[in-house]
Amino acid sequence: MGRLNQRNEGRPPSRVTDTAHRVIGRYEIQRPIGAGGMGVLLLACDPMIDRLVAIKLMREGLESSTARERFMREARSAGRLHHPNIVTIFDVGEHAGRPFIARSIAGQFERRGV
Image 1 (cartoon, helix red, strand yellow):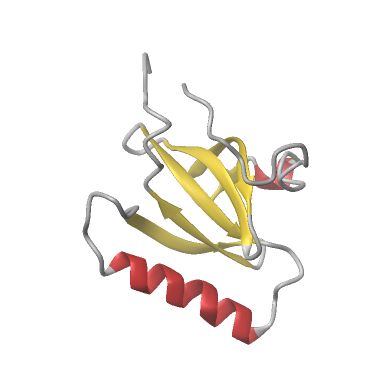
Image 2 (image 1 turned 180 degrees about the horizontal axis):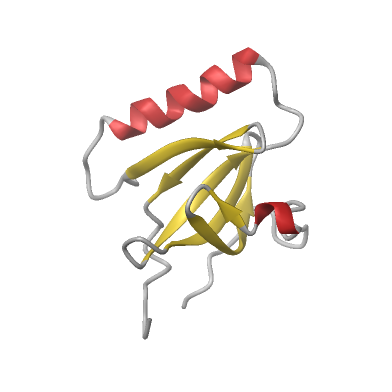
């Protein structure tokens, strides 16, 4: 697999390696790949269809209804779009009280030899 250039290079993306985050929904977490203001981005596998996905998990501490609505508005907005330069939204859900978005991954990752 390729390596994604991280915006936060040199800093750990988040505390996502504990046992509580090895599976989010049906998605098996492989490793963190980035972080931003609203959440962390995780490389995961959807075992139902053997496909790599990116999971955006809302950052801890952003539990306000305003932040949650903004996060879900992002998912709804992106979910309505279909364009080769925009990620595809596959699923939304909640894990340990935090919303997540399962989406396609950027071109830097491909499923090889799996």
